[in-house]
Image (cartoon, rainbow, N blue to C red):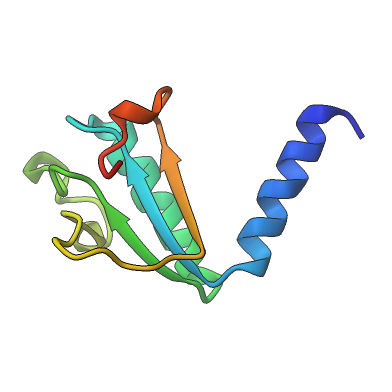
Length: 99
């Protein structure tokens, strides 16, 4: 197995074996950041996982038409525990919405 395949296998294992997830995207999100966050959130929920989707800006009003848009919210003011945090559409850590 090459290195890339090994990384994908590790990601798949984390998604299968863990229960509680936080899905995040970058600050000042665009449509693909919000859409990918919502898509992964819905996919994990379909697998029976407990998932919270957060972005510092919440769901932008112009994307409220997306199915289940209400799932993407502002991060809470008090910390929460998760098994896995997933940052999407973020090339560098300091652009994620909940450092």
